[in-house]
Image (tube, rainbow, N blue to C red):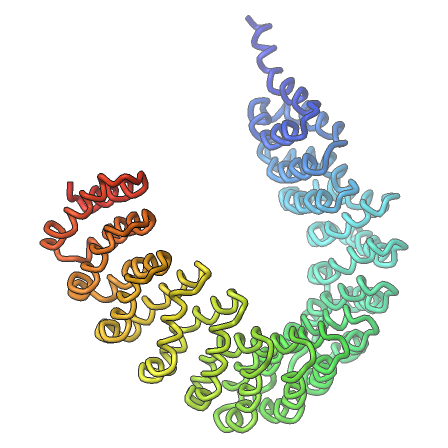
Amino acid sequence: MAGADGDDSLYPIAVLIDELRNEDVQLRLNSIKKLSTIALALGVERTRTELLPFLTDTIYDEDEVLLALAEQLGNFTMLVGGPEYVHCLLPPLESLATVEETVVRDKAVESLRKISQEHSPVDLEVHFEPLVKRLASGDWFTSRTSACGLFSVCYPRVSSTVKAEIRQHFRTLCSDDTPMVRRAAASKLGEFAKVLELDYVKSDIISLFTALASDEQDSVRLLAVEACVSIATLLPQEDLETLVMPTLRQAAEDKSWRVRYMVADKFSELQKAVGPEITKNDLVPAFQNLLKDCEAEVRAAAANKVKEFCENLPEDSREQIIMTHILPCVKELVSDTNQHVKSALASVIMGLSTILGKDNTIEHLLPLFLAQLKDECPEVRLNIISNLDCVNEVIGIRQLSQSLLPAIVELAEDAKWRVRLAIIEYMPLLAGQLGVEFFDEKLNTLCMAWLIDHVYAIREAATCNLMKLVEKFGAEWAQNTIVPKVLGMANDPNYLHRMTTLFCINALSEACGQDITTKQMLPVVLKMSTDQVANVRFNVAKSLQKIGPVIDSSALQTEVKPVLEKLATDTDMDVKYFAQEAISVLVLA
């Protein structure tokens, strides 16, 4: 019997070995995903002595299997016996951190970072730190790139002699011959700087930062810009000018557009990190140059930051800086040749009105908004219309209404259905800002026209839009302006338009209330139950189910019930099904 028990305990590992040697990748993948179950079956001792060595020896597989393995091992601490044995997980993860596929290496590094927190300080020095050193001095660049992500997690918890070794390894990797390694080091420079003592930040990190920021590869230089944000927040104000700013100025004028793009993209963060004085003296001219950059991508990234940059300027000189330095550049961008640049600017320019106040908005910004509302690119017009609420708070929307209307009408009839869809979504907001009279006079016909659009998504959105408008303007307005037009579509020769009537009734019944629904909408729905098209008939059943709770109970019994019972005996299966469902939901059986 004991022998049989012994065989039983070997069973999970035997199955795993079989599955991991199977030719089918999916089987191998499934068995890796079940590792935790297998480890539980084996117990902590055998997981350490049998399962982990077996896994370490079999790391030659498809990348997706290795990726799953790297992820699983990060959650294995308790399965090997808790924190005191966590170092057993290091050998397989070390192998995974050196494979060729980047995704697998990154996942192995993520798991190593996770389990490093579970090492005691002693274990960290005895087991984890030697692993980092081995990776950092590996022959292949793959292991050296992985090492870059591990320095910062072990540095704070080791002795000062080991700290000195870690700093030395990081320095070496920052000047590695392989660009991929320098790139990995540059991407972790900011993170590593955060765990270092301030003296070492000044003595070590700054020199590394300067070297990486003038690397021959632009992919390394642009990562140094990201690190700049972290480094600038760590240094006292008086050191920034001498230690960081020369490098940052150089990056803002770099010959590679990718580096300049990165500076533009991180501009708001840089601005917060360096503080108001340097912003005034250095960043304002740099920002002007980025807004005038010869590459459209850089101009677009800078245009995206205009509002944030202006918001973060020191209050005492904010208006003066915007009016004299930023606004002239913005005026040029409004008529930029590239539509992405114009579109990026249009998505933020409205925000300037709250910063500059009423008079400046009317005098300087309003002409720009009006120009953008007439732009040939639909995205630009759309971005302006979608941000109207900012202007509405400052100057009221009336100032824009004359130019708004043609722009809205044009977008509403745009050939691209996604543009039409976007403008529908802003309609309730616009209606609230323009008021009911303006809406009835100018926009009501548009909203009704969308209901018979040839794209279903537009008809659906238009139905939703009507519901939101009724919520805004009230049931009485609906009864006078919307309901008659919707019900008129019930006699349309196109069955899709007849169905839209039903969808509108579904959406409007609750907002319009019992009286309008029972007296005006219900008769139309009931009449449509004899439509020749089965799709219309089964939608009648669905509509009756939807509006049933709103209708008064006597009408339910005398009018709705007979119609549903008739539909329940229809020749079409779907009509039958939905009629029976409606009868059971409304409890009419």
